[in-house]
Amino acid sequence: MIHLALLRLFESYFRHRWLYTLPVVLMTVLAVVFIVRQPPVYPAYGKLYVQREPLLTSLTGIGNDGFSWRTPAQATVGELNELLQTEAFVRSVIEQTDLQPRMVQEREVVKETIDEFREAVWIKSKGENLVEFGAQHEQPELAQQFAQATVASYVDWKINIDRQESVVAQTFFENLIGPYQENLDNARADLQAYLEANPEPVRGNRPTREQMEIERLQAAIDKASERLTDAVNKEENARLALSKAESEANQTYIVVDGPLLPDEPRVSERAMAADAAIFLVIGMLLSLTGVVGGALLDRSLRLPIDIRHGLELPVLAAVPQVRANASRPKPSDGQQRRTHQTRNSAIGQQSMPETLAGTQS
Image 1 (tube, one colour):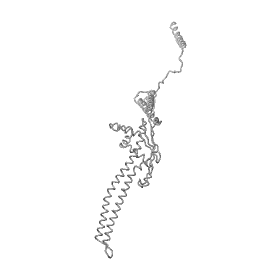
Image 2: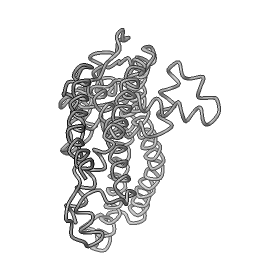
Image 3: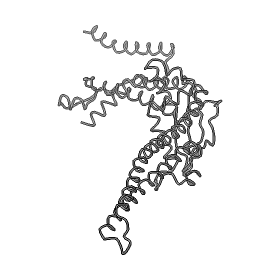
Image 4: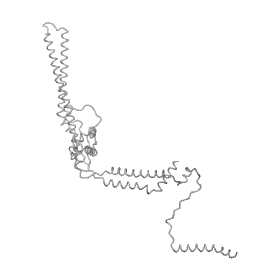
């Protein structure tokens, strides 16, 4: 059965091979036209150096503790790619470019602008501490603006997020310092009141019960003092983190190579080959669909194996296809005249005995 199907497919293709080759040719032509009509794309890219631990963090001792399996470049690329998926961050970037007026128009225009920006920007790691950022666009000015604004917005985001965390922490510990100070004052007042109510005896030692009560009150003072000291230290650290947020971000992220205004478009041979392959595959699928469809719809008996499988009859003989030999030379008029005379003579010679036989009888 598989042999029959293959024969039917080959017979269907070779019967109209030029027709089935036409989709491949047309799609190839369309691929060439599509590639030629593609607008030029201008790339603008730069490099960002990310330090593992800036000097200010090492001096203040406030930073990320522990070991991370990701390099600074990988962590930065991951954060940037996640931020590019948020509309708020993308809006902050686009507002620094020439596309800012489009962000106050209809919702559809805003969505198209955001999608256009996301398709244009790329971020990738180039080592442990080096990050390459860039953008490509039909307008070279927009490509440069996209690249610059992306890194600038990321640094601002880092500053704001650190500042916001520091403000929240500072406010939290400031609210704790007051109650902790009040608890400490109350504990000290209790101890002072107890000592005034139970003065130390002139002779001998205090009773055991009084000594234990004084130790309990002193322990309460020590605990309250420890809590207050811890809150004050953490509030100071939060205030220090708030003051150093901007300086740390500027020290951590350093633009080594800024994006320049591109003057030549980029031609990607890989992208051209991919586009051409897509058109070629579509053409081949159309041709294959036509071949298979022709083989399935054609119910005529064209091969001896069709008769054996379709009618279950034996094949005694098959009429061969005879084609005129195009390479054989055509006879001239004189040769045709002599051939005609020879044929007439042969016919006359054949008819003379028949005539004589009739006369004799």
